[in-house]
Image 1: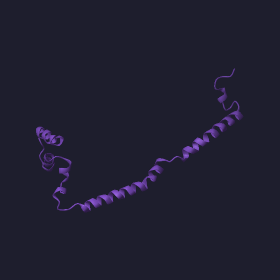
Image 2: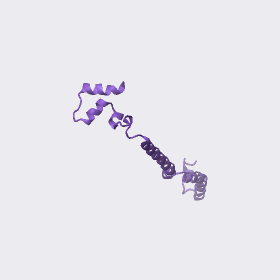
Image 3: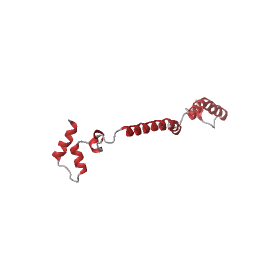
Image 4: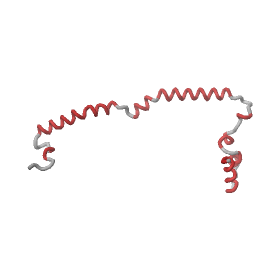
Length: 114
């Protein structure tokens, strides 16, 4: 009786071993070739380069158009960043050097929730 795994000993039957390795490589070669042809991360990112640049150019053109069409003297368009992003009370705190008390902070942030 043969020991378990004795058929995997390359020294036992070199011809059988060579045949086994050749058969495994032949069966695996289509899979390995397919994996080599698959796009790498760099190739995928390179493929997206042109569409991203085109989209960026379109967005830049649209932004330039909006800036060109907004009237300069329009008081509605003359908001500062602080007024756009945060309530007026909080904007005053940011512009000043003083820090608010806890009660003022809660009340000021509550303006935005309402």
